[in-house]
Length: 368
Image 1: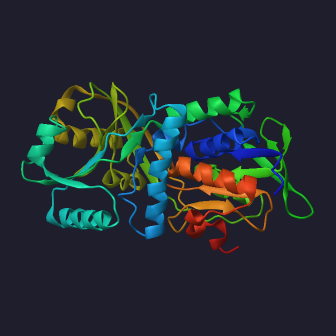
Image 2 (image 1 turned 180 degrees about the horizontal axis):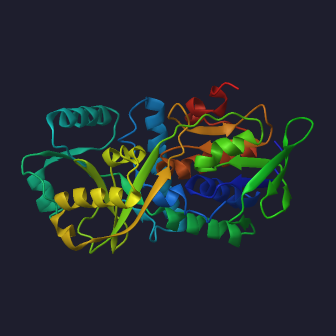
Image 3 (image 1 turned 90 degrees about the vertical axis):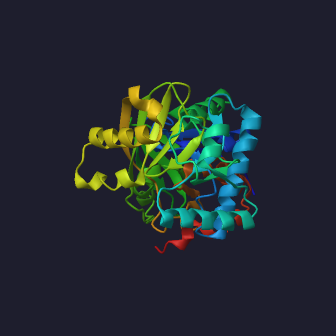
């Protein structure tokens, strides 16, 4: 197959950045286009937990996320871990019998699939791993030692920097206004909000929450869920060492002087009209119950972001046969999946070969 000429990647979050990096390192001419700044959209407002332990809804989806974890380790070996890669494991525990029974059952399934999980008690976790936690001595706590968290913006900065250093182009703070197709339906030109036009051979739609709009520019219907989430950053002397799901709250470090907080329960309040500042206050309160050392911490930032989730909950990755030259890279769990989707989609664009890992996640499953 003839290699493509110029490839426009629309959206430079974790998915777009990884697709662009994999294309550029294999010799493609890449233009990265973002309506804002690379990595500062949903990627920067994600819990950024690299895992497959929460992805057991189907075996193919689990397997893809396991491959995502491996791809992160490979990427850290290539570009260096620096400040973005934190493979410190993940903890989970509950405070009610129903939730506890559910996660212990999931742990058994994961173990049967070869996924590493260790069961400890609250007392053992406080003694060996996280002395700052306030949790009952006998409560079962799951440790997933192979899971990690990622500083998404730092990772995007690294790979985008390498694309540009290798001759690629970055167009920031620039929206895609139109996509022109030829008589055969294939992509030809991208028109930008700064008035410029780019002749292209391939377009990758990695536009996250705006992916449905970009798809519409080539008369493609990409149904998306509406699922907002609120993430809060607090400034503190960080008293924990890894990502964790405590009762009602999830927490992780965010460098040496900050933490990230999120809760599905607090997300449910977004549509009631609560202001982000109040949602952040509730998250902060929940975190202080679990980690009393956070009593003197303060809220630094809070943001409601819209997760890029196709309608059936699974990624949409690959070519759209009805629009030659148009590809999609749209998914929740973009932090976990970014490096593997980047590698697999770049290989598909360059060689035409479709990887079986993506067989269940092809864009053509959505009727047009």
